[in-house]
Image (cartoon, rainbow, N blue to C red; front, side, top):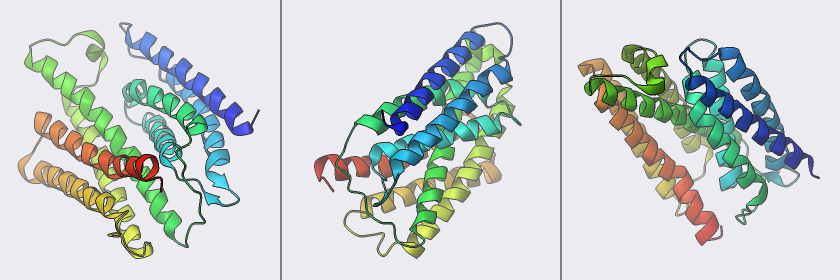
Length: 266
C-alpha cells in the first residue's frame, strides 16, 4: 500500500477519534479537557501533512488539483485551530474542522480530476502558500461566525441551551472572530500582491473569475473591519459580512477550480 494512503488513513482515523472526543465532551456539563482534544488532533495533523507531502510533491512538480488543495486548506485550518487553542478557547471550532479535514482525505487520495501536474514558476510558490493559509484562516473565521450566530440567536431568545452554555461570553467570541479576520485579511492581501507580482496575467481567461471574486472577498472583509473600527459593528452584521466574504472566496477558488478540472478538463 502506498505510504500516502497509509498516513492518510491514519490521519482519517485520528480525526474521527478526535471529533468523537470533542462531541462527547461538549455533551457534558463541564468545559472540555483541552489536552484530550488537542493531542489526537495534533497527531492527525502530522499524519495528514505526511500524506499531503506524498501526494502534492511529485517529480513533475506540485500537484495542486482541487482535492489536494482543499485537503491542504483543511489541514492548515486544523493546525491553526490547534495552535490558537493554546492561547484562546478555539477548541470549540475543532468540532467543525475535524470532520472537514477527515472527509478531505479520501477525496484527495482517490478522486482523480484529471489535473495535470506542471513545474511551478519561480516565486509562484509564495503566492500559493499565502493563498492556502489565507483560505484556511478565513475558513476558521467562518466557523467562528457560525458559532457566534447561534449564540446571538439564543441570547435574543432569552436563554442559552445545550453546548452553548459552555462557550465563552459573546464579547470574547466577537473579539476572537475579528482577530482571525484581521489575520486572514493580511494574509489575503499578501496572497493577492504576490499573485500580481509573480503571475504573468491574473486576468487571463482561466484566472479572471478567481481574481475578480478574490478581490471582491477582500473588499467585503475590508468593509467589515472598517465598520468594526469606525462604527462598532458586531453581532449579526459581523457574522453576515464574514459568511458573505467567505462564500465569495469559496466560489473564487473552489468554484472556478471545479469548472476547470471537471468541466473544461484543464
